Image: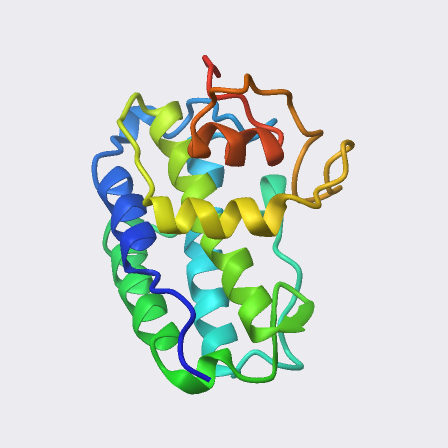
Length: 192
Protein backbone atom coordinates (compact mmCIF):
# COMPACT_ATOMS: atom_id res chain seq x y z
CA UNK A 1 0.00 0.00 0.00
CA UNK A 2 1.24 3.49 -0.74
CA UNK A 3 1.73 5.89 2.18
CA UNK A 4 -1.48 7.77 2.96
CA UNK A 5 0.33 10.85 4.28
CA UNK A 6 3.82 12.04 5.09
CA UNK A 7 5.00 12.49 8.68
CA UNK A 8 7.65 15.08 7.82
CA UNK A 9 5.61 18.25 8.52
CA UNK A 10 4.52 17.03 11.97
CA UNK A 11 7.98 15.69 12.79
CA UNK A 12 9.61 18.96 11.74
CA UNK A 13 7.18 21.00 13.85
CA UNK A 14 7.81 18.83 16.92
CA UNK A 15 11.58 18.94 16.40
CA UNK A 16 11.51 22.74 16.13
CA UNK A 17 9.91 22.91 19.58
CA UNK A 18 12.14 20.26 21.19
CA UNK A 19 15.43 21.87 20.16
CA UNK A 20 14.46 25.16 21.85
CA UNK A 21 13.60 23.66 25.25
CA UNK A 22 16.02 24.71 27.97
CA UNK A 23 17.13 22.81 31.04
CA UNK A 24 15.34 25.41 33.16
CA UNK A 25 12.02 24.43 31.57
CA UNK A 26 12.25 20.68 32.25
CA UNK A 27 10.35 20.88 35.55
CA UNK A 28 7.57 23.09 34.13
CA UNK A 29 4.05 21.71 33.91
CA UNK A 30 2.41 20.86 30.59
CA UNK A 31 -1.19 20.67 29.39
CA UNK A 32 -0.98 16.91 30.12
CA UNK A 33 -2.23 16.44 33.67
CA UNK A 34 0.53 15.74 36.22
CA UNK A 35 3.17 15.73 33.49
CA UNK A 36 6.26 17.92 33.40
CA UNK A 37 8.19 18.92 30.30
CA UNK A 38 10.82 16.33 31.33
CA UNK A 39 8.15 13.60 31.56
CA UNK A 40 6.67 14.53 28.21
CA UNK A 41 10.09 14.58 26.53
CA UNK A 42 10.75 11.09 27.91
CA UNK A 43 7.42 10.01 26.43
CA UNK A 44 8.40 11.54 23.07
CA UNK A 45 11.71 9.61 23.14
CA UNK A 46 9.73 6.40 23.68
CA UNK A 47 6.92 7.06 21.23
CA UNK A 48 9.12 8.12 18.32
CA UNK A 49 10.97 4.81 18.52
CA UNK A 50 7.79 2.78 19.16
CA UNK A 51 6.04 4.19 16.11
CA UNK A 52 9.14 3.74 13.94
CA UNK A 53 9.11 0.08 14.98
CA UNK A 54 5.39 -0.05 14.20
CA UNK A 55 6.20 1.01 10.63
CA UNK A 56 8.88 -1.67 10.21
CA UNK A 57 6.72 -4.26 12.04
CA UNK A 58 9.70 -5.21 14.22
CA UNK A 59 7.64 -4.53 17.36
CA UNK A 60 4.82 -6.93 16.48
CA UNK A 61 4.44 -9.38 19.32
CA UNK A 62 6.93 -7.61 21.53
CA UNK A 63 5.82 -4.07 22.29
CA UNK A 64 4.87 -3.05 25.80
CA UNK A 65 2.72 -0.31 27.27
CA UNK A 66 4.67 2.87 28.02
CA UNK A 67 5.90 3.55 31.52
CA UNK A 68 4.44 6.47 33.42
CA UNK A 69 5.33 8.72 36.32
CA UNK A 70 8.47 8.16 38.34
CA UNK A 71 9.37 5.03 36.35
CA UNK A 72 10.18 7.15 33.29
CA UNK A 73 13.56 8.83 33.01
CA UNK A 74 14.70 11.23 30.34
CA UNK A 75 17.68 10.04 28.30
CA UNK A 76 20.65 12.35 28.66
CA UNK A 77 20.99 12.65 24.88
CA UNK A 78 17.35 13.64 24.29
CA UNK A 79 18.32 16.79 22.38
CA UNK A 80 19.97 14.73 19.64
CA UNK A 81 17.99 11.52 20.06
CA UNK A 82 14.52 12.97 19.48
CA UNK A 83 15.43 14.67 16.17
CA UNK A 84 17.23 11.51 14.96
CA UNK A 85 14.30 9.30 15.93
CA UNK A 86 11.83 11.66 14.26
CA UNK A 87 13.81 11.44 11.03
CA UNK A 88 13.89 7.63 11.30
CA UNK A 89 10.12 7.55 11.93
CA UNK A 90 9.46 9.71 8.85
CA UNK A 91 11.68 7.47 6.72
CA UNK A 92 10.12 4.24 8.01
CA UNK A 93 6.56 5.37 7.24
CA UNK A 94 7.57 6.37 3.71
CA UNK A 95 8.06 2.69 2.89
CA UNK A 96 4.94 1.25 1.21
CA UNK A 97 5.10 -1.92 3.36
CA UNK A 98 4.69 0.16 6.50
CA UNK A 99 1.04 0.75 5.58
CA UNK A 100 0.17 -2.94 5.05
CA UNK A 101 -1.36 -5.34 7.54
CA UNK A 102 -1.49 -5.15 11.30
CA UNK A 103 1.21 -3.60 13.43
CA UNK A 104 1.85 -2.87 17.08
CA UNK A 105 3.03 -0.07 19.37
CA UNK A 106 2.76 0.33 23.12
CA UNK A 107 1.18 -3.11 23.47
CA UNK A 108 -1.69 -2.16 21.14
CA UNK A 109 -2.34 -3.90 17.79
CA UNK A 110 -4.04 -2.01 14.97
CA UNK A 111 -4.22 -1.92 11.21
CA UNK A 112 -1.12 -0.06 10.01
CA UNK A 113 -3.03 2.98 8.63
CA UNK A 114 -4.82 3.39 11.98
CA UNK A 115 -1.51 3.13 13.84
CA UNK A 116 -0.09 5.79 11.53
CA UNK A 117 -2.92 8.16 12.44
CA UNK A 118 -2.32 7.49 16.14
CA UNK A 119 1.36 8.29 15.62
CA UNK A 120 0.46 11.51 13.82
CA UNK A 121 -1.81 12.48 16.71
CA UNK A 122 1.05 11.90 19.16
CA UNK A 123 3.44 14.10 17.18
CA UNK A 124 1.00 16.96 16.65
CA UNK A 125 -0.68 17.03 20.05
CA UNK A 126 2.51 16.56 22.06
CA UNK A 127 4.24 19.11 19.85
CA UNK A 128 1.54 21.57 20.87
CA UNK A 129 1.77 20.46 24.53
CA UNK A 130 5.51 21.12 24.63
CA UNK A 131 5.18 24.41 22.75
CA UNK A 132 2.52 25.66 25.15
CA UNK A 133 4.50 24.56 28.19
CA UNK A 134 7.63 26.34 27.01
CA UNK A 135 6.10 29.48 25.48
CA UNK A 136 6.82 28.62 21.85
CA UNK A 137 4.75 28.95 18.70
CA UNK A 138 3.35 25.81 17.12
CA UNK A 139 1.59 25.07 13.88
CA UNK A 140 0.33 21.98 12.10
CA UNK A 141 -0.54 21.59 8.44
CA UNK A 142 -4.14 21.67 7.25
CA UNK A 143 -3.64 18.16 5.87
CA UNK A 144 -2.47 16.75 9.21
CA UNK A 145 -5.28 18.48 11.09
CA UNK A 146 -7.90 17.15 8.65
CA UNK A 147 -6.58 13.60 9.17
CA UNK A 148 -6.71 14.03 12.94
CA UNK A 149 -10.18 15.57 12.93
CA UNK A 150 -11.43 12.62 10.90
CA UNK A 151 -9.79 10.15 13.30
CA UNK A 152 -10.97 11.94 16.46
CA UNK A 153 -14.56 12.71 15.41
CA UNK A 154 -15.84 9.56 17.12
CA UNK A 155 -14.18 10.40 20.45
CA UNK A 156 -16.80 9.84 23.18
CA UNK A 157 -17.68 12.89 25.31
CA UNK A 158 -15.91 11.36 28.32
CA UNK A 159 -12.70 11.03 26.30
CA UNK A 160 -10.63 7.89 25.96
CA UNK A 161 -9.21 6.71 29.29
CA UNK A 162 -5.43 6.55 29.22
CA UNK A 163 -5.28 8.62 26.03
CA UNK A 164 -7.51 11.69 26.07
CA UNK A 165 -9.42 13.64 28.69
CA UNK A 166 -13.07 14.57 28.24
CA UNK A 167 -13.93 16.39 25.01
CA UNK A 168 -14.06 20.15 25.55
CA UNK A 169 -16.50 22.52 23.83
CA UNK A 170 -15.17 24.92 21.20
CA UNK A 171 -16.81 27.90 19.52
CA UNK A 172 -18.16 27.48 15.98
CA UNK A 173 -15.32 29.61 14.60
CA UNK A 174 -12.58 27.54 16.29
CA UNK A 175 -9.56 26.65 14.17
CA UNK A 176 -8.86 23.08 13.10
CA UNK A 177 -6.01 22.90 15.64
CA UNK A 178 -8.30 24.13 18.43
CA UNK A 179 -10.84 21.44 17.45
CA UNK A 180 -8.19 18.70 17.52
CA UNK A 181 -7.04 19.90 20.93
CA UNK A 182 -10.61 19.95 22.28
CA UNK A 183 -11.21 16.40 21.03
CA UNK A 184 -8.15 15.29 23.02
CA UNK A 185 -9.30 17.07 26.19
CA UNK A 186 -7.08 20.13 25.79
CA UNK A 187 -7.98 23.80 25.78
CA UNK A 188 -6.25 26.09 23.32
CA UNK A 189 -6.47 28.69 26.10
CA UNK A 190 -4.34 26.56 28.48
CA UNK A 191 -2.13 28.63 30.72
CA UNK A 192 0.31 26.85 32.99
